[in-house]
Image (cartoon, rainbow, N blue to C red; front, top):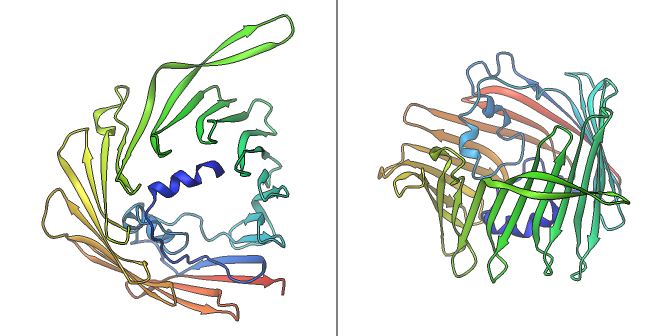
Length: 370
C-alpha cells in the first residue's frame, strides 16, 4: 500500500540484493520464457526454482534453497508492457510454451499523479476481477489511498477497504469488508516521534442502525484482537525489537520476539529469535556485506552454537548475482548463473546451473522505444 512505504523502510534492512529482473532504458515491452532442462527439479527443492527468478530479500533467500519439492508452472511465457512513463500497464501469463493463448491478463490504469486507480484481472474463461482505488491529497501534497473496492463477474463476491489517517496523515486504521462474509480491522499506533509501535488486527462486528432516510452501517471491534505486532527502536530510529503473535487468542508457539543489531553503517548485522514469549534463544542470524553493500554471506546459528553449520554465500559480477552457495551440515548446493546482455546492458538470456547441471534457460525479448 502506498501509505505504508515510509514505515516499511523502518523495518527493512538498509541493503538490497542485485535485482536480476531490473530493466534499463526506455522499455516498451518484455517477452519472457523459461525452458527447463530435462529432469530439472527432480532432486531439487521447489524454492530452488524461484531463486534468481524473482527479486531477493535477505529474510527469505536463505530458505529459497530449502523449501518445497518440485517446480511449479513457471515455464509459462509472460509478457509485460509499459507506457511512455515506464509504468507497467499490462502483464499477461500464457499457457505453457504457447504465447498465443493466455491464462490470465492484468491491466493497470493510472491517474495524472501516477497513482494506480484501476487493476483488472482477466481470465481466459471470461471471468474477471476489478479493483478500483481512490486517493486524497493531504497537506504535505502526497496522495494517500482512501478506498479500495474489488468486484468480479460473480455478483456474490466483493471486497472493500477503507483507510483512515491521523491529523498528521499517518495511517491509523484500515477496515475491510468482504463478500465472503468475514470482516477485519487493522489499527496502527505511533510514538511521539511518529514511529510505528503497534499493528493490531481485529475481527469486526457490524452493528446496523437505521434512520428514516438511509441505512447506516457502523463497525465495532470484536472482543479481542486476533493478531498483534509491536515495535521498539534504538535512539537513531533503527528497529530494535519486534514482537509478533503474542496474543491470548493464539497458541503459545505463535509468539515470537525478534531483536536486530546493526553495524556502523546501519546495515543489519545480527538477528536474534526468541519463541513462545520466553527469553529462551531459538536461533540467530548473522550478515556480512561487500563494500558496495551487496549481501555477501548469511549464517544461521541454532540456539547458542558458536560455529554455524548452515550458511549461504553470494557472488556478483557487474552487480548481477552470478553464484550462490548453500552450506549445510549435510551437503553443499552451488547455484550459478550465466548471462547474455544487449546493448542496453539488460540480460536477454540467463542460464541457471545447480551443482554444475543446467537447470533452466530463461530468455527475454525486449523492445525499446528509442
